[in-house]
Image (cartoon, rainbow, N blue to C red; front, side, top):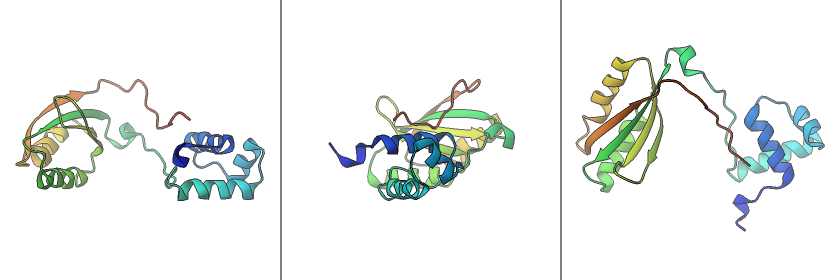
Length: 156
């Protein structure tokens, strides 16, 4: 088995705690996992070094900061050559409202998830960032009515 996919029971417990509350103290995690704080600290550092976990972040509720509209935009490219892919990558990287970009299979080439203020905000991004690109053939948009489930916890 590839070591990057194998987690010990202790590592899985730590990851479950960290995914629910990254602000939990090492002492709290030690108590919850029946380990010493030093052991917990070493395990967390080892998980970071293996690339299993990244830096701790705080999640922001988009609606509470004026970005309450989730938009999913499918993008079809005219070409998939390296310069076209690089231009597309630069454009989506430059737009903070685009949170996630996936290369996908099927009729479309990319799926973008953005959080915008309103339809006018989305239209500006669509016209300024996406449709201005020579490599983009077209887009299709889905507006989310509301979030039903939203989690960042990966099943372990």
